[in-house]
Amino acid sequence: MRLAPIVVAVALVGLVAIPYRMYQHAQEEMREPHPRVTSVEASIPRINYIEQVKDIRRGLEKSSHVQTLHHNPRDRSHYIEHEVVVRFSPRPDQKSIDRMVASLDAKIKRDFGKFMIIKSRSLTTKQLMKKLAEHPDSVFAEPNYLLLPNRKPNDPYYTEYQWNLPLIGMEQSWDVSEGSNDVIVAVVDTGVDMNHPEFKGKLVKGYNVLEDNDKPQDDNGHGTHVSGIIAARTNNRDGIAGMTWKSKLMPIKAIGADGSGSAVDIARGIYWATDHGAEVINLSVGNYTSSAVLKEACRYAYDHNVVMVAASGNDASDQPSYPAAYEEVLSVAAVDHLKERADFSNFGDYVDVAAPGVDIPSTYIDNDYASLSGTSMACPHVAALAALVRSVHPDMKNSDVMELIRKSAEDLGPPGHDQLYGYGMIDVNNTLKQLHTEPANTEQPPATIGGLLNKFLLRLRFGFE
Image (cartoon, rainbow, N blue to C red; front, side, top):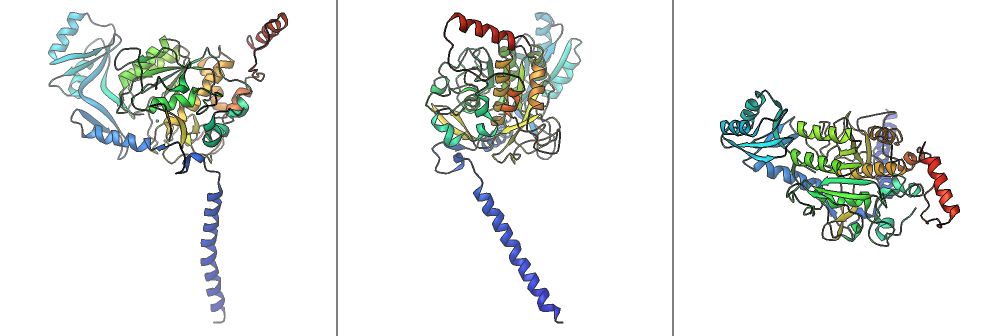
């Protein structure tokens, strides 16, 4: 009986000690160096783009002409009813096509040569697919799927807000390479704010897939934000710093103001970017159903030595997302400032690497700046890294660039590849160090015989390895 008070005392100590340790842990969390941009007092507004995308999905599902595919109780894809994307090889002559379309009570909604969209007045998508699949020259007939968007510089927002760049070793990397004017990164997205001062002198000719013109003006904000992460003007005493100071941006508008775009339009953007000199393509978009037209476009770009990078998705799901899950594409998950997986980031065997994706400050439409979260924000960090690699070694094959980015990443999860982080968080400094380069010289050498000879010798040493 004498032991009872002692047991009670020990139990009481335990009850007190446990909350104390929890409080102590909370205090440690409070002391963690959270990014300045997360403060409500920040001058750069936070925009909850993940919730905006969820609103877009809910809006699509209310539309009578949009159908939903449920992959599981949570993950779903969308397509336009009464429409089919079809490709023939060889393509029938026009009279045969006209007879076929008439028999389907349909019309050709859009004809792109390689493939076309056929819209029927009375047949469902499934009925159209069945009839077109029976055609002897049909390569594929699929729904018209919809995709949804995933050295210290002197720029004033850099020191205060851009926690993401020091985390991946950018400051040391800029001593190695600031990028190259010859490397073009295409951003297939909602376009870019063409008048934003951060893009002055940074843009090459782009394309508006939706309107078939050369005015890819952003009316959403997503594409402008992604573009700024890659290559906003840097060291100009204004705004933010981009990862690659000298590389050019090719804006491709394939997504409308509402934030959704079709697989066909994304594919057309990939073809256009490839045919017009892009060496890297950023795809911060995704859908849970593989599209034959999108896969063909990715294969086309890959076969033309383009490095493609795509977001893994923002639903905390292991459902494969496309184009990220294609083998021709680098798939990117998101981490926070503690190098831990962002709670929204998709995961799975198809994830290659991770990059910062929580409260990322960047450019926004109307000459503004904003902080967004998502794998869409992680993705351009990797695209910019690919551009830096190609700036140093322009002749490196795309498969070698992709493998270098994987093997030089900082391993965060279990040793080796894992489902949460892939091969780990990108380490830009480590990646560029493995290229055996010398530090970048921002000063132009004098135009003397000695200077020209030195430049020639450097090219001999590093350009023909």
